[in-house]
Length: 296
Length: 287
Image (cartoon, rainbow over all chains, first blue to last red; front, side):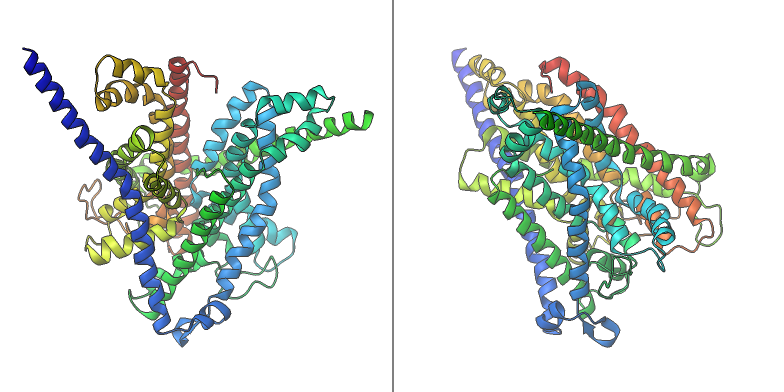
């Protein structure tokens, strides 16, 4: 009788070890997938350099694959400018919202704003793009008296809205995570709530806030559909905020369908994807440096 | 002293304004899309076949494909993500290998979806020869879901108090029995909320599916063949606005927009709010 119980227990323990290996395999699959992405996209992208010189790709703005010209500089510049502008527009609003939710909002309002930020994330990017196309672009055309209304301004406004939830939720967590005694000490010294927020809470939460901004940039630089619908899709360097231009993502999504796999043209699109991938990996490393890596 | 008070008042006012703007932008987006799209929705539109040239086409196959690809991708990604999440929450120590796995998960979560789409194209279409269709789309979409689900799993497991595990282990249960019978059931509300939010996001995903699931649909409605062409609602919205030739494309786009908004509202409000309340009741936590 005793022996069978022991046997049963041994069996369970053996089973336990087996499950543990299985779970480890699942977890290690993450590393396997990201490495395969880097290797396969990298290999396909780097084979561009068999036909195109790196100098031409990175330093030239002439993009005309039909004519053998593969200068992707204007797309890289477009992506970076759109991202920067989006952060400049979106971060102040998002950060103020985060402060509000963490310290000022009455509990019931916070209970409304939490699901609201989830909804922001859930709205499909084509819907953002469609709203940009049907409201933002005509609005800019009418009120700024410009030719089309497509361009960096429309793009960065839509992107600014799309990155709000990332900035809000991560910054709010960071502000709430500041130890209570710090805040109480400041208030006890006679500081007002705003002085406490500005001089104590925000500096203490800074790593988390910066993390949220870098993640927002990662989201903005990789955003494809919404950008493609409002940027104008013209392979030219942006001369102003109102001229149609292109980004890495919009160019890939427009041209991938008509390029033969493995041609210099197709490979150069994979090279653009590799540039995007490198940018987002660099951002993750930057977040690690900031101390608290958290990904939404 | 007075000026500090006034500053405080102004800052508080600005914060309320920001909150109003945040809620206002969201509300106006949702209301605008529903206002434009709801009148388009009809049984004919929701179940009808799309038309390439003439007005009056429906989105039946796209609606079916959206849910079919979503379900398939969740079925593929959830077991793996659950396993990885359990490993990270319950087994992983603080060593270099765990660090590598965590870094990989974070990296995977930030890879732009268009890059995942191109990767899926290389692997599933060019190397494995699955062709552009539902299976390739679902597999690629899984890559997007997995890191989010891993994080959701890990976080929900961490909300289960340590003394639950200790009590179970003290009764002689093995580690896996403890996880399976005690930890997972208690983490369930958080898991369900997380899964629904992820599913809602995956539902509207476009960039990843254009080159893997394609921009065409099967000729018959409700085609369960995993190799059939798999255009989804979101892809169709992009396609008719960008490339489509139908004269009523703005109507179709509005209708799809409203359908997508309704779906995410259902996913986000109808499914997750009960989960949140359940979680509050079970754990007694105040956040």
